[in-house]
Amino acid sequence: MKIFASDVIKDIDRATCEAQKIDSIELMERAANAISCEIVSRFLPSQRIVVIAGPGNNGGDALGAARMLIEQGYKSVEIFLFNVKNSLSHDCAEQRKRLIAMDGVDFTEVTRDFTPPYLSDGDVVLDGLFGSGLREPLQGGFMSLVRYINESKAYTISIDVPSGMFGEWNAATNRRDMIHARLTLAISFPRLAFFFEEQAEMVGEWKVLDIEQDTQKIRSTPASFYLCEARNVRHVLKPRPLFAAKRDFGSCIIMAGSMGMMGAAVMCARAAMRSGAGLVTVHSARCGMEIVQQSVCEAMFEPDKNDRIITDMRLHHRHKGVAAGPGIGTYDDTVNALEGLVKNVGEPLVLDADALNCIAKRPTLLSMIPTMSIITPHKGEFDRLFGEHSTDEERLRKAIDMAQYYNIIIVLKGHYTSVVRPDGKVYINSTGNPGMATAGSGDVLTGVITSFIAQGYKPELAATVGVYIHGLAGDMAAAKLGEYGMTASDIIDHLPLAIKEVMA
Image (tube, rainbow, N blue to C red; front, side, top):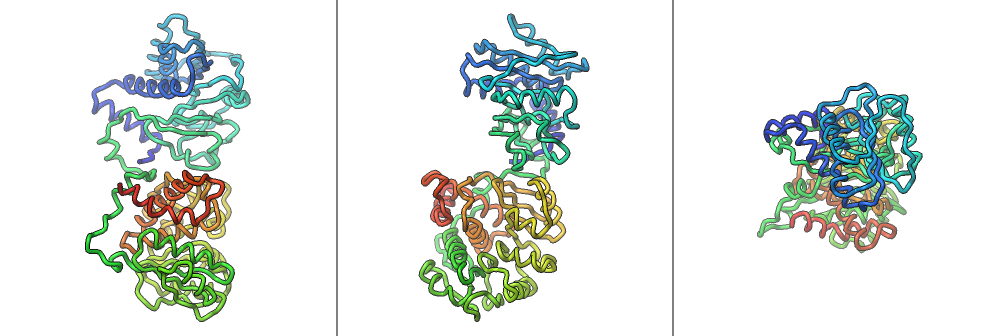
């Protein structure tokens, strides 16, 4: 699914009206109907609902939804339209006209001073004050109104985005001056701001409402941000030929593990096998030979000359997929070995965990990473590489710049893991759950991505597909076991089922 900027969505609205030969008010009626249906599915007709509408089309959506709720038997709907500048949008004015034509409507148009209604935590507030078209942070009376609603603890439903929030970037806004919604109903498309941790408290649960926008316009309109869903991955995954042999699915080598950290090597190798690689070799310290050979009997083991750590990452055979990092430590000899790898391997690498920490110790290695390599940092590793950042938004902006500058793919891990490509496109993952925040989960992801590269997928596709499959396996494990007791091994066990489900 494409994630469009707010001004682009307006263009799609206009194109939809032209293509379907409808007026913009009809499109607004669709939105209002979708909003009212969602409210009806969640609340009884006896529920008190306070509608706060602004002067633009977001307010028009709210007025239309209020009218439809009343028509469906909701008796306690109180509506406040803020028209302090006596300047309603055309469609908002039309919705106002339709609303006040009804008998017995509890409607107040605010043009000057305003005494807010009493609100409690048992009330529902429908927030249609300002949508994603907002251009400046809220001030004055509107800021006070938002704070009043938040302090009431009412169940607040925002239309498109919580009022006070911009649809994309919010570095210049104060989160205290945004509606803290329990539910956000986005019309047609999610907004980029939904995917940042610092906005989660404001957005709450979010849901996209379909109003049948013009599909041709959506397909032809370019986007920089995408939400990766099952259908996108299904389109990429290749069925296996009937007469296939193991070498048809590639060979990968994983530089992982050290004394006391061999579990990372085991999990990475198991994940690579479980996600379809034909041949997997683990290169690690000699002390890990017995552990790996007993834990992953399908994998081969290539011992380092050192008993405790990895000191040599030279490739002795050709491998389609090459990964380094899980559990290798940041010893000087290991950093030197990694430098030799990135200097001498002309093919893309997958670099994770301690490989990234080694690079942070020797930043000149960043410029040596082969083109289209994949790095998979979590927040701490990202900040060690690229400087301290205080928000997800800051990290994503920096990741976009760094992916382009170094011509690499950055898998920025988190609840919504983002695959940032050097062409500026960002694929945000839709799978995964808090149970995956467990030791070894990142090692599993490294194995999955490396496996897909070994199988012949281009690095940008291997990263996107790997992240999705990894998250889906985690969701399947959570459905079976719950989120509290999940382990990385549970994710590995569900990888084949996740691939099977996507391809079904």
